[in-house]
Length: 377
Image (tube, rainbow, N blue to C red; front, side):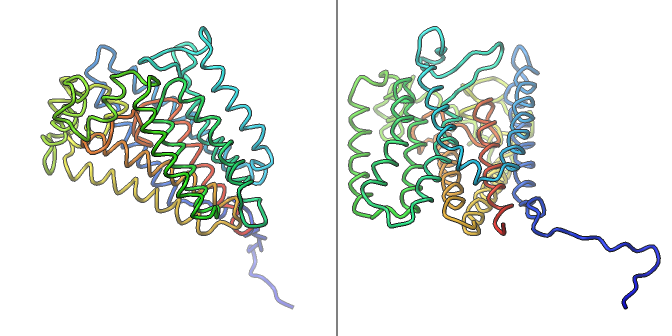
């Protein structure tokens, strides 16, 4: 008979409990990047007429986002798979409702928001997660090899929200869906010959949109000015030029936190949202901006790692969808700040000011943590 020392109690530990497998590294990276981003938002807006308005709202968005991340991580993603149709229908209904005059509101010539008091809700952001969950659930549940039927259903699931978003019109957010869709189809196992045809059709579609009247001329100029800036109007390249000047002035170590001349003077338009990367570039220099890229790269790596560790195709595809979304957001946002990518209004994850985008990004992290926590279930 084995006796335990006096006062010592043998405790049963359920090592299969999901919370024991939480990705604390990803959680820490998200926390540090969010704090970094909050400081940048405050720096970009502290010289406005209401210096604490933006940062106060941003903190509220972060708190709500953290709560949503917790709920998304707590619910078994298999249940999310079962609810995916309802989630998808709800997101599509919201995208349709926002197009109704008097219901959806127009900002910057785009009808994409619901105004609720002092807050604005953009359903297209939430539709990203809903579409990822739905398409991943569908493709991951197919037992046999994917064929034309599965491809057609997936394209309908992707195309419906994309079409409604184009009607706003918002080509930038539509491109996010394109990248996410390609990632899900490739990893999901769609034959290469179908993907090549889709690629050609996609390129033709983008060219057609740019030549049509779907977008206003100024939107077309912003999207194409990075290719031939010498032929673009001053209005089309003004934002990019100011962003480049701010980043270039930061040099190696920057002008000092809260001391950036371009930032203090408010010369960079939309600096707290689309051009937030100019703040660390100017005030913290190459070192500070590089640190931010390293933090975001760490988040991307942890998402990729979770996709590899997922216990089933559904979980893997959910992570792949989030991975494609985050990578495109980072690449596009930083690229347009540097003048090497078109200006599309894509926010920088965990850094840019914005309610819907912030909450959506945290929800995406909750989905990844969900898959990581249940990889042994």
